[in-house]
Image (cartoon, rainbow over all chains, first blue to last red; front, side):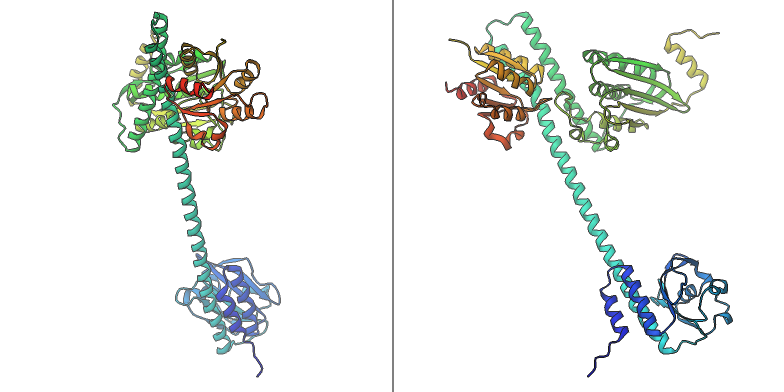
Length: 426
Length: 120
């Protein structure tokens, strides 16, 4: 017995294993023409309120790649009405946009929806002569459309599955990254806590061991022990602040604060650290906007930003501080000309546990929590902290922005002058 | 008898100062280096009997400096004691060192370890 190949069966088999839209389109257009003997076929997909002529196979070009509103187009009609239609003579049917057809060979057509219950597309068959498609032709076209609907559904499922897998992989990678950052941080924390402890232990042993400690030796020991104890206290304070912030338990006690005066004080406090590196630390501009803030916490913010700028400056460099009022915003900028930050690291400057990635050595010291605390405190103040840098070795500017406290302009001006210690000019 | 020379490589000034003091009190002659590069130079020119090496140092860290020492025939027999606040750094290269001490480390243990590696 001769084996007769059934083109519809071939198409359905091919569609069942299709895993992408292009394969579905290709099978449909080839099979649709072979099955109907039409002079051309189109495969149309619905995109919102438009028909998209995704693919075609015809004796002369039709509309591949073009989009038409659903209402102006016979494929749209088939989709909106969820049923097939046969047009024996396109020039006698008012649903046909004749201008669009005049440039083509088409004289008659049949159109079936893809996925009958809720159409996602349509398949069109076209003839170069007036022809009323037979029920058999329409039937086989509709069977093909049904198989295509199933195939497109499979393609979508397959894409969804791949996307879900991709998201799962991504989530796993970022969890692993977070865990690695945490491990690095714990190693750094252990190092930073052990180092001052080592110094203190050694000094205590030395003092106990030595028969007669001179006054000079005692003073030297006390100085070192004090410094290293302070270092450890700061580490512990920073850790507590970060863990309080993570638990949402960090709070501030707000008063009206003159930001200019706050910066004068902060620069004064940071001068010894700057001098140690032979840096010029200068308040280049000090306006006096008033903001609601916690004076101690604001000093902590300023110290963290200033000590960071000092830490990352090369010896003999400059750190410039300015306080200005910009409309309803008060702005503090701290600019250094030191290590700078790679563009890709900028968004992570204020994140926890990220110091390790900056290639730190013990010389910088610390846990890298300073800017994390700055951001948390600025948020509590209703402000923002941002960083700018043109890149490595290009310096860094940290910008703190606050809302200026509401008050009458005149009052603020008088107060500002009083704080500057200058008489008003008449 | 001449004093035993101990090279202390440590970048943190406070730590290096007090270790020098402690070791001098214990009767050693102390040579100081602030990073791996200085440590290598001092090892070549001053021939210490033993080296106490910090790991986390700028320019050249303690691990790299010790590897370089082990590569130099005239220096490879000098005992090296790793003294680090991050002992995990050493775990992959334990065979490079004659002893590993974790900070904080009491001076007694350091002194006893120095004597041990010198075979006294």
